[in-house]
Amino acid sequence: MNSTPRLEMVWPEVLRTRLPAVRPGPGYALRTFETGDQIVASARALRSQAFEGGGELGWVAGDPAHAGYGLGHLVTAAATGRMVSEAAGRSTSTRRTSAWPR
Image 1: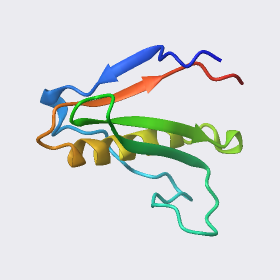
Image 2: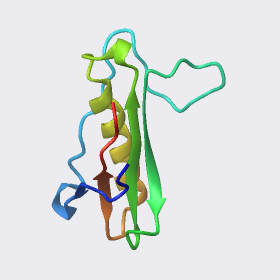
Image 3: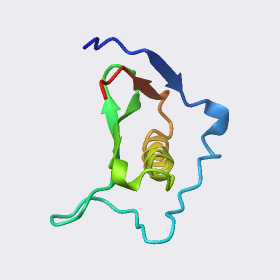
Image 4: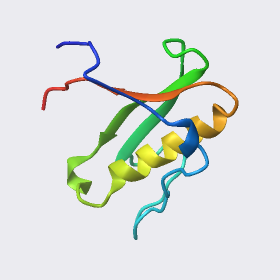
């Protein structure tokens, strides 16, 4: 597997106050993990040394049995919001992706 990022996006400074909406659909709730939870979608906001003063959105994943409910958008928006709010006053928030076999 090639570990070289194929896509790198930087969250624009002008959009730091306009974050994506985070609204779980019926039957779903958004929260941090607790022992015993059933995880159907997940994303992480990471502080990253690769981007001076910024963070990285990573490990976005979802259970295929729950596809079509916008959960990928939901967890990505939540992680992006957290990363951007924690990076206030710092320079960069970014997302990178690489190929992952199916």
